[in-house]
Length: 113
Picture 1 (tube, rainbow, N blue to C red):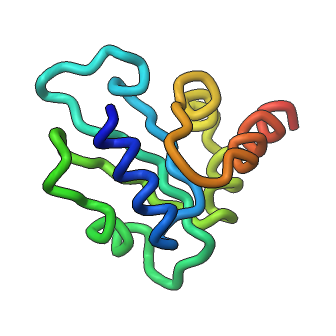
Picture 2 (picture 1 turned 180 degrees about the horizontal axis):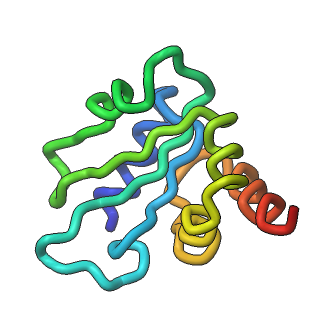
């Protein structure tokens, strides 16, 4: 977990992310040798399509494969509003790794609206 947290801090410190949250089996503690690292990565803005952002966030030096979900701030908020299962995963199981912790408050606010 230390390497994953270091990776998240590196993204934030390097200006590549505003927020990094771990979700999925690693966050829940139910991972297996076949698990990957599910990361929610929030960036300030991007002109790229969502799928085109992903390669920048793959790091072969990590012990497991990274599965990044990369959102702009607006996309993150919209996804929280329109995808209840995603919102629940982030709110209930998400582990803050690095960045602007106040963005996670949006998860709670969105759950109530």
